[in-house]
Image (cartoon, rainbow, N blue to C red; front, side):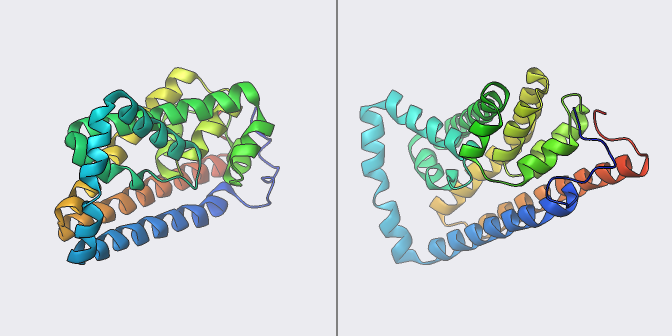
Length: 245
């Protein structure tokens, strides 16, 4: 159950204030990543040198297609569970080998699988296992403020606004309804997977304007979801009722 509404979060900060800095850092990291892609894509010689490795990667994957697709999906799953793993490393390879459509399906599959595993770890292995895999303070803070009966709309915002490794652990710990969690996870990861694939394709094709535009859209989408999430929590505070209480 959610902690009583007159009791502060474990860190002494509200969820909005505590998570805002982390999500802003996420936006900054994304902006730096996009800027790096733009710089590399603009640097023709270095960009060409990086792309020279792709035919070798394609040959390896074509030789063992099931293994290649499995590694791609598992890496994507790890990126949805661990903050230090990024799908950006593998997306250009996937787009080069399989094209946009298949790469997007594999990426989405990996992210959803990672979310399910994070949920299962939280639900069945509990807090000690979660702490071993993630030290993100938002897991504790939101675990104190949400409950297993939180409204689906709030969970949808929660999933879309926060770093992908957070909601699965939190909602698993809270024993939130699995199928509702899976629906929220799939709905929010779909646009992110599409945008990530377009980033990878634009990088390969050196389409600088698209790189910048898609990156900006991703930052704005995250910020919009975060703003709505914070507003919902403010509404609950003003009404003296907390999500799922």
